[in-house]
Amino acid sequence: MQTMKKFTCVEDIGALDKALAEAALIKKDRFAFTGLGRNKTLLMIFFNSSLRTRLSTQKAAMNLGMNVIVLDVNQGAWKLETERGVIMDGDKAEHLLEAIPVMGCYCDIIGVRSFAGLTNKKDDYEEKVISQFIKYSGKPVFSMEAATRHPLQSFADLITIEEYKTKERPKVVMTWAPHPKALPQAVPNSFAEWMIAAGYDFVITHPHGYELDPAFTRGAKIEYDQRKAFEGADFIYAKNWSAYADPNYGKVLSTDRDWTVDAGKMALTDNAYFMHCLPVRRNMIVTDDVIESDRSIVIPEAANREISAQVVIKRLLESL
Ligand code: CP
Image 1: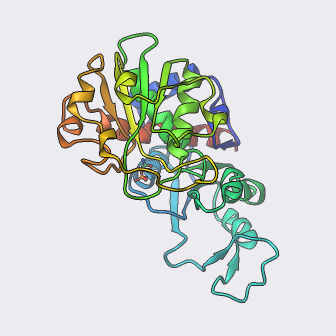
Image 2: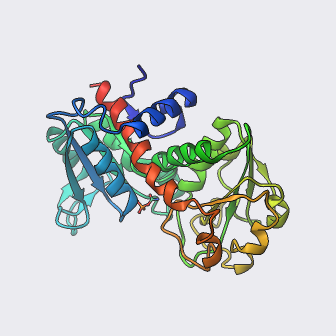
């Protein structure tokens, strides 16, 4: 049995074939382990908005028989200070260093969503918030998207690709696409590390200036010509992200809709499936006809969020 004390990255899940086998088992009967979570409580803490993560993770915990508490930190809780040494004479009434152990008193497992601020690269890439939960809560902690990774999404993406692939080693292309706002690099970082760990033929395409942290992309092919990257692809994974490289960290460098995924580009692929983690900006990231086509698997991909969350929570429960 593979147990875990935390889940923030691909290494934490261990052997991918075992994790995928466990996901398949759970998908066959998601209520097979309802006794495991009896009288156990999951606390889900959101510093940022969510639709899929909130619903799928709560559902996964309920499938395991758990009680669930959801806290939206920015709605109804005291405003939290995260920096040590600050004189707290402003509008922040509580420090994270008290709040975290207090939260740990009321639950058995904690899920945390805390996005990158995109203003201080060092803070973001040190994972300042979730690492404090791991250190001070006294409970197993899992990421519901942190500053640099979104592992529950990437695990669901991997499950989806395994379900739809027709080749042992499919060509998976992650393409940058335009978006009006600055978004974190968590989803693309994470997707890259899971695809590389899976051993797929993995290609990343983006405009110059959008290079991701090489710590995540080492082993991937980088192709700046999007059309060339799409040739022969089995899966197209679209995502926007803001710049990682200095001095432009966290900035939008382009909103060029020539990078939008459309039917003409999909025609260059080997009849590829279209994927996106959602929410998606239609006709910025992808055209209506592509996301509505029979090769779009964004809904089964979202459905697999329940499965990836259930594998992770099950393993954390087994570690208690
Ligand atoms: N993909 C994803 O994490 O969706 P939410 O932000 O809605 O949770």
